[in-house]
Image 1 (cartoon, rainbow, N blue to C red):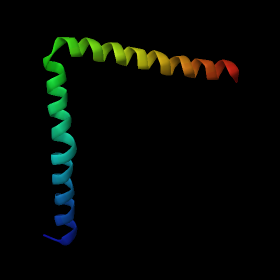
Image 2 (cartoon, rainbow, N blue to C red):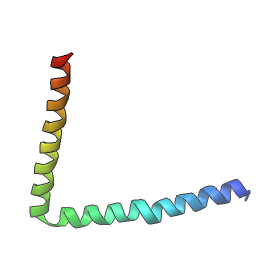
Image 3 (spheres, rainbow, N blue to C red):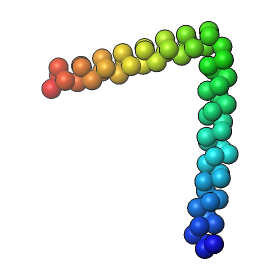
Image 4 (cartoon, one colour):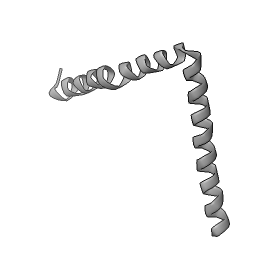
Length: 62
């Protein structure tokens, strides 16, 4: 293996250990409780409405 391949595999291992696995675990914890699912869906809808409202305002002002 070349040095470049070793560094690439090390970077992949770090991403898996520090980003992907914690994200999967956090997602599993959130999905396991129905109250949290409702809260997350509500917050996502609010965020989406806020963003679309801001873009609509910008289009009207232009």
